[in-house]
Image (cartoon, rainbow, N blue to C red):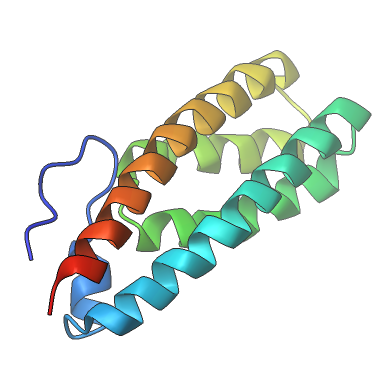
Length: 123
């Protein structure tokens, strides 16, 4: 399995975590593709409502999911969103961070769908 030709995802951790079992990998990718869009929507809703603690909590919850899928380019951004929401500082930066997370995740979701397709075509 070659999952190295992606811009946003790196499935090295997932491969190691699942011992390379394609069915387990499929299951974890499917779980992420279900949970992550909901988590992003929750973050956006809390931002729009000015609900900083729930926004912090939602960012904290999605952080390990993003790490498991190897979306390392978002590690700092998610942490910054979490910190800014906790401290209620740099609130102007939150909107930019959320847009970046949404953009990268949208592209990563497409890459993960391709990875799923690749897994399903493997014996």
